[in-house]
Length: 380
Ligand code: GLN
Image 1 (tube, rainbow, N blue to C red):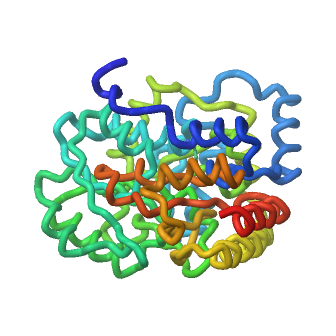
Image 2: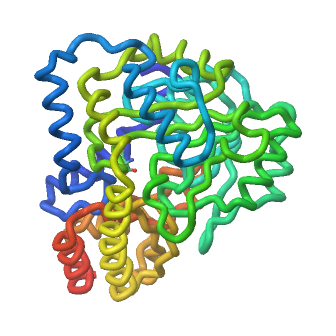
């Protein structure tokens, strides 16, 4: 394997899902719903296939879908973007992330990330040859340590990577945090790459897009996807929204990574994004009920549970149970209790920072969540 990837292992999500199957454990690890996406979107995909929308899509997206992305973004943020020049459709947000890094980062460029961070950030930054500067967000509230951020950002910084609502902690960046980050980015001429795939799973506060802050649109790439909002994580439909001068870089990388994304699924995704408000309200209602079951359950089991404002994840401190670290705890949980969680130490440059924390997901039906809690009450 090439040097730029030799330190990366099989992703923790794949490892944990394989162990879940092997041990017959309930999988509250990898974030994918165990229920299906909405009928009207699935029907739209079937119809698109039947209608012969089956050849290569235009590289940067099926026009109807680019339009739907721009319309959605306008509704959510108030920003008016040109669907032809500022929206790029990608194969999931994961490809948007890769295309953004590869299309806009030069080898040696400094990029600031907030740990814990989603695993693909580090891998794609490494592929791009970036120098990673990591700032650790710490419990209980995972607030941005502004003084540390101020001391690290400089004219040598090319970009700051933000993820809000944040995987794995459920933290949402407040307007105050975003404003300070924004003003330092403007002062130092730094770009912002923002992964907002959980924007529709914002429970405790309103989601704020960095691009909507004054002076920020022109230096921001906003990335999102269909998977979480429509419970269709296997469709792999994502997008990046950015001003034309940044879109150019993203599109150049995208052209040679995947060239184009599934045509019929884009047609269906266009229908999905135009769903009535009631769809998004119901999604949130359903997830709030699931979240309550898991969070109350984890408290009752005896974990220290950290407040999660958004996403379908919640992070706990496992140390009341006496294990050496998150990996040892998760191994015990799988083998002896029959429940899978995600150890978080893999999401830090310094794994020590995450050794007390594990992540559970509540994107499962209520019965599954209840049985997982019962197992933990009984056997942990
Ligand atoms: N985003 C999902 C999670 O955090 C996993 C995606 C993946 O398996 N790579 O659980």
